[in-house]
Amino acid sequence: MPDHSQAPLKVGVIGVGYLGRFHALIYSRLEQAELVGVCDTDPARIATVADEAGCPGWDDPLALIGQVDAVSIAVPTTAHREIACAYLEQGIHVLLEKPLAVGASDGAAIVKAAEQQGLVLQVGHLERFNAGIMALAARIDGPRYIEAQRMGGFVERATDVDVVADLMIHDLDIILALVEGELVDVRAVGTPVLTDRIDIASARLEFSSGTVANAVASRVSDKKTRRIRVFQPTGYLSLDFIEQTLDIAAPERREEAERPEIQRSRIKVEPVRPLDREIEAFLDCVRQRKRPLVDGRTGLRALELALKVQASIAGDGR
Image (tube, rainbow, N blue to C red; front, side):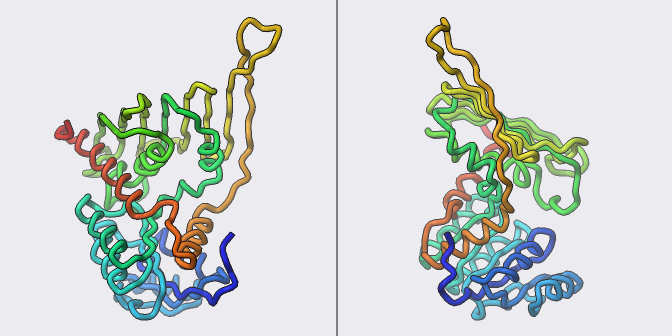
């Protein structure tokens, strides 16, 4: 549990668009945090969010240097390296929205800056704090095949990156966390539909352990789907992120039966607010100087896999 006994950490939010606004509102109501202010380049957003969160606002993204212990950074991915490194180099802990960066070299530079300063760098892979994923991960036992689907309708706010970096990277990160062994092969296809970037993609991943995983992501689908299925020797698991249900099918041997029978069950996962939990975990890591669940190197590994998927789609990844 987070330690609330110490004085509140002074925090700020850089970039208060769709996600950054939620960061600011959560910080504003947490006892363990004092929201010093928010920064954005849009005066209207600054005024709105600063009023909602009850704090000052600035149009300079570096205005909070020297005023805070930690920041959330939710600016466009192209600005991650510049802004994250500026805060890290001044001794300020960072919660950086995913993806970590646009490219591997930028991501590595951010990780290096945090490690050189001995600071907490947490990457905002929100699904790791989903109660359903936690329930699924607790039941993983040598998975052989994983299938992940993440599809939904088109929204303008995420068009600075393609669907691999926006949506699929969540499942790539989850798969990397669930599977033992090294990645040995990546094959992917994808295409633009409504933008000049990849809007729908499918990737096949092979690991040295023999596990195979397929991930499909779309931001041009009518129906919203968030599901992951796991096939392993001890049974089958199917998590519906939206319904927060975990279906389990497992063989159970009976004395009178020639072979095991399949027993099915459904767990209704008690929902939590993943972003609240993620931010609370970040603050706790800053206080305790603990390694985050999704630290910089974990975020970099997910980014590098996403880049391999993109390269395979482009035809130069093999």
